[in-house]
Length: 469
Image (cartoon, rainbow, N blue to C red; front, side, top):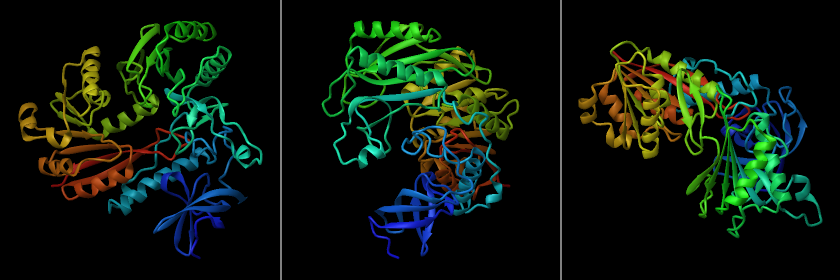
């Protein structure tokens, strides 16, 4: 069967695969179908024809999998935020663990028995400490509206998340279960307030309107609650009234900020900001360390699971008095600080200038004296001169971006022969690629998947490496 674009086919979903899509096979050819689960029998339409696979759109579930459940949220099938709500959480963990095992064996050429069962999150919902909602004058239509014969107006004050693959269309949320319930209540209140008071949504194409984003952060360990309103124009009269209305309705909000992004850039980071209420930041903790989180600062999205991930990394490091630790891709220094006891010294290396400044600030705020941070590209900064200045590391932590480590960094690690490496990853496929190269010098002892994002296909992993004799 050739499986041409536009063709409708019946498929048996046999596995969970690429980006959480269901996998079917037709005459040995892989077909990927979103919103399906292993065990489903479905009717689907081929929408993309690739050399070695096909991508299809789910049309109908003919026979549901015994593992399929009813999603908690009405938007689950069209929203990109929770693509696995139709799968029980226990099964999600199984699929994620298998995904890491597959990457280790297929890409890393490693024995997949080194991969332990994934560590699940205590909270399956309401686990995020930050949600960034977008505002638009262009609403994403439902499947029912798209199929109607008559014209359906898509102009509205839409507040929610981007429809998958669309920069211009916003899924107008009626519920969301990723952050604490108060988060959606605040979104809904602001949407209704703006409609009632004639405050316009931003229009990407017209480059006009007022409100662009609503970013909400809450602390896991304290009662702090932040609302950051990102606007296209700087109008403090409007913002003062909106802030007062917000605080009257939600008195638990501890700080309100107005970021002004008067550029065409779609980012929620303003060119400048006004603090309308409170200190302009919230305070949270990871382990014993306290962090002031400003509206545009990076902080781990799932605080509870970040602590679990860091504990695993610290256990793998097996730190002892006198150890020198290097933390590559250290970001704002959260993991560097977590590793600071009982190490003699921790050196964090990071490319982003503002992250280095935040890392130094975090160390100072926590009174940690045995941590240093330097700025630069890992492949350029990670040199013999740095080793001569700070000492040769006994333990090296690396937590690279999704693309993994640069080949020059991997080569340098093989040359340095650090006794122990702990590799933290948000992408097990690039981790497996890097571990394949490191395997000639280091023994890959163990890989521990950690689920930071329930209801999605994303999975973190921590690998424990030991220098070969």
